[in-house]
Amino acid sequence: MTEVATSELKKAVESQHIGKATVPADESLQGQPVRRGTAHIFGPKDHPTAKQACAWSYARPDGKRRFSAVLHTEPMASPRDALRTVIVAEAKT
Image (cartoon, rainbow, N blue to C red):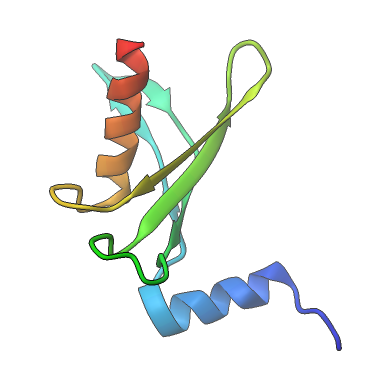
């Protein structure tokens, strides 16, 4: 069996299920960038309330990588909402 490129699988997901599988994940506060990158959108299988999930990662100042994954449940309606939720939660810790 021949494996296919990830880009081909991405196209299949986008065309058959969710439209666009990656979106910009940029957020600014008072004109200064807080986070820049790309969020990857997934359709969680058999989840009772979430219609989709998004995930992204970024390099922290200490050089380690931080991974985030958020289920889209009410009132979260977009990857940007998910990003903002994580930024606020991280600021509280």
